[in-house]
Image: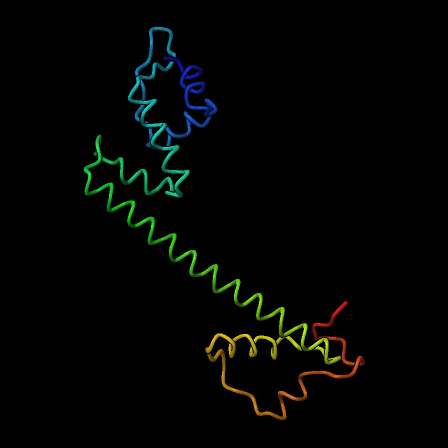
Amino acid sequence: MKIGELADKTGMAPSAIRFYEQSGLLPAPERGANGYRVYTEAALKRLQLIQIAQNLGFSLDSLRSAFAGCKVFSADDLLERLDGRVREIDQLMAGLRAQRRDLTDLRTTLRQTWAAGECMDPATLAESMATTRNKVARPSRPQKELETSVHASKGMRGAGFRQR
């Protein structure tokens, strides 16, 4: 089949098919007497596999290494790759949960600070967030220094975060 027919069957643009070919994900097709690429059913199946893998979040580099010297995946190899991707997703989700928690903590801190008529400078805010996560970002500052970095007066607008 010609590239246009393959594009129709896969829903890919011809340029994407050529890209996969140039990047080593799709073996180079035979050429007809007219010089046109002639793709086989194997190319169609390979492109469908690439689409599935990309929809599941696999990178092109991981696909390239999986396809290198391998025409068929063993069951164990495929399961191992799927398990690896599940672990990656778990790590991403844990990171996103931590970011969400930090954002909601930050929002609460800012609302409480603003409700008290104060503004908070970035250094104090960073320290507050580090404390919330039970991490020490840098050595603790003395209490007096902490008190002076939270500005109660509107005259200290320069470096603080204020409610608008």
